[in-house]
Amino acid sequence: MINNDSTITNEKQYKSNYNRSTNKNQISPIKSTAELGYLDSTRVCGDERYTELSCVLICSICQNILWKPVACVTCENAFCRGCIQTWANKQKQPRQVTCPFNCMFQEKRAPPILNILLSKLRIYCVYAPNGCGQVLSYDALEGHEQTCQYERTPCQICQKPVSHRDQNDKHELRQCFKEIYDRNPDYVQVQFIKLLDVIETSQRRIQALEKLLGIRSQENK
Ligand SMILES: [Zn+2]
Ligand SMILES: [Zn+2]
Ligand SMILES: [Zn+2]
Ligand SMILES: [Zn+2]
Image (cartoon, helix red, strand yellow):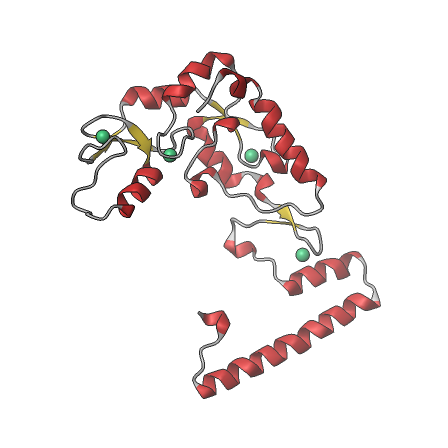
């Protein structure tokens, strides 16, 4: 739950996360809010006016700020859509789902007032630890994160910023070595690429043999 202290120190906390990850040589990929399915309350921009407001906006399942909330038709409590779905899926009798407050659960739209209150929140982009300085409205958050350039994290080998969101932007070992070679056309880089050729050729031969023997390749699983 949010208390006064946590909201005031939010900014500090989120920035210290930022420092912690940039101090390391390797930055691990960060999932977007939509992928996570929850909104950590430390990401709410520290404005005291919203401290009490934020308390009302907590999901009782994940204890984070409601993300895409829906409500229980009986008790009208709201939950993140993802949270209540996971909750319902865990129950033994799928036809008699109870909400966390023990009433028969049926999903209904979250009360409009909740969405109005949520829209007043200002939230740090999930990629702030990678250096994004944007603070966004609740409603603009998802759209921003879909295009935020700070989603990219440096490749651990060549340091080129690589997207984990964009599947078309796949960074494979060959591109990686080429990246290093382009920067520093050293003989050792050429050797790396030749080595990769050898590895790939033998991989293809193994796959062909596996196919012949009817063994399913590990990679195709
Ligand atoms: Zn939740
Ligand atoms: Zn209920
Ligand atoms: Zn951003
Ligand atoms: Zn690379």
